Length: 115
Image (cartoon, rainbow, N blue to C red; front, side, top):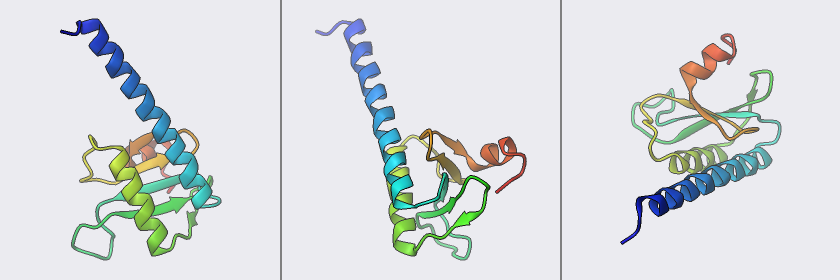
């Protein structure tokens, strides 16, 4: 029977590898969406009433970077699947430089109302 210390060590290794995978995903998304420093992900496109993964990309100045439908859907699915414990009832922003995910309202307030 494993000791509690070894279970914590395995848990710490898992959390660490999840962070590494999320940072790697953020770098891949940054390469896929040139010029973007952040991606806002939600379960609902503004013009639709049914849920569907949706993403919008922004540059460092908060200006929108064009995403075609396929890339937006891929980015949204990657992000949603990488953060399974997050409630996707509201939009979230992924910082592509750090791999940190924040609720969009919190990121909006931190940016001084930009975006």
